Length: 328
Image 1: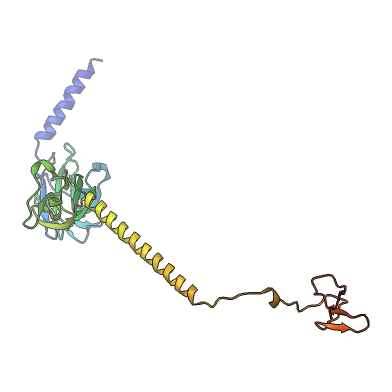
Image 2: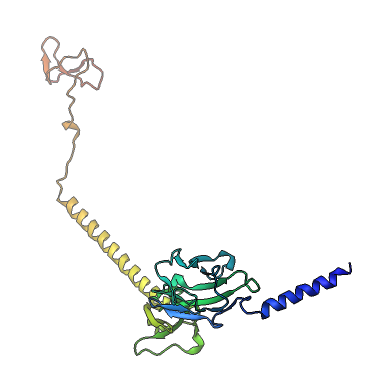
C-alpha cells in the first residue's frame, strides 16, 4: 500500500499542470447580474471564453424556463465543426454576435423578445482536451412587459355599516405591477381607519360603510414599463330606508286591492237590480208528459147519467177518477 501516497501526489501534480498550462483549461465569463430587455426589442446575452480553439471546439446555447432545473434545458443553437446550427422554437430569432465564435466571444443575440423568453440561458464551451473546467455560464433574462388593463371587481355587504372588498388584477406585467386605489370626484375620501389597501394583491378593504362611501373608485397598476387602470362604482344603500319604502308600497297595494274589490261589488249590485223579477205560481206548472195508460182528458165535463162533475187527475197523482157531487 506504499504506492498510494505517490499516486495521490501524481494526480495533484497533473491537475496543477493542467490548470497552469496555456490551452488546457476552458474559462467562461458571463454577467453576474440578471439582464432585462423590453418586450419586442433585441437582447444581447454576453458570453466570453478563453481556450485554445482547435478542431474540437464546440459552443452550445440552451434555455430553461423559470423554476425548472438546468437538466431540463432546451437547445437554442450549436456551433461545431465550423458550422452554426440554430434549433428549437427560438431558432429564427437567435444568432451569434460574432460568427464564427472563434475569437473568444460567444454572445447570443435574441430579436423580438417575448414574455416567454424570460428564463435562464446557458452558455457552454467544449474544447477537448480542455476538460479541467466545466466551461458553463448561466445568464438570467427578464423580458419587461407593461401591465395589461386590470380587471376590477367588488364583493361584500354594500349597505350602511357593512364592509366591501374591491379587487384589481392585471393578467400580464413584468416585473409584477403594484396596485393603487384612488377615489374619483369631489366626494371626501374614506377615513384611513376604514380603508386598508394591499399594493401587492391589489385589494382594497372598506369597513363601516356609510352613504358617503358611495362613488367611483379607480385602480392603477404600475411597473417600470408603464401603467393601466380600471374603474368601478360602489353604491351603498340604507336598509332602514328600504324598509320604509317597502311599507309604503305595501299600503298602497292594499288600498288599490280594496278599491278594486269595492268597485266590483258596487257594479255587481247594480247589475242585479237591473234584472226583472221572476215569480213562479203553483198554477203555472204543467206536466207535458203523461203517465202510461192515461189519456188526456178535458179539464171538466159533466156526467149526465149520474150528475157528477169529472176532473182529470194530474200525471203526478193517482190515475183514478174522482167524482164530486154537483151542486145545482
